[in-house]
Image (cartoon, rainbow, N blue to C red; front, side, top):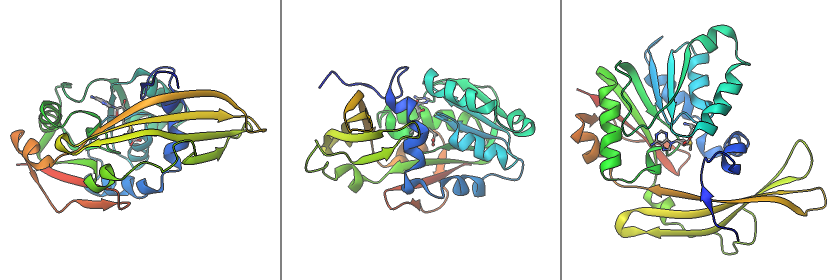
Length: 255
Ligand SMILES: C[S@@+](CC[C@H](N)C(=O)[O-])C[C@H]1O[C@@H](n2cnc3c(N)ncnc32)[C@H](O)[C@@H]1O
């Protein structure tokens, strides 16, 4: 197998097929509703790691002004392209910016900060988590909420597929053929709460012959988020909200 590339890269298949694969992930069902329930009517929302705009656009459609920041230009480019097709009033409520959630400073505050779909888990659970919570706190109104969706530790520990040569997903493509997903390797290091995976995306033609493939590295970090949040002055507001049995939305309040 060729050397694995980083996730969300410019030419990566994780980027190109993000919406298709994420749209099939039933474990995310209901996440937008959780974030919408946390947002005061018409309140401004900041999304950390907005990606292709899945959550940003949905919250804007519900009437919120939403700023989405993301580190990956290729993910944001997809969001910008989709924004053109939105109703003018919805598009007008959306701002998309390139930025790193561990350091960005927009010099304004929001009623709600959201960090969906394991985005915090993409950065190491030490200084990078503390800095991301500091970003959330810096951008929150007093009394505002910050919601972080994190994976459960037992899901991180779960073994990979018994046979890595068998796809974990085989999805017909509208243009013909199939998109296949393989988990080529999966290693969890308990002591540092780090999961390293190589996910291979493959495009097969109608005969099943693989025509294109891209192996990409996806690393998740998990730890108790409460101590890192506390360093930024954020306190847990309620018990974590179960999402799909594999993760929880942790809601913190700025005092
Ligand atoms: C799983 S996707 C989530 C996208 C979107 N929030 C959603 O729920 O569909 C994770 C996103 O986080 C972004 N990301 C990872 N590290 C980041 C960082 N340090 N700052 C900003 N974005 C980051 C990635 O580029 C990617 O677009």
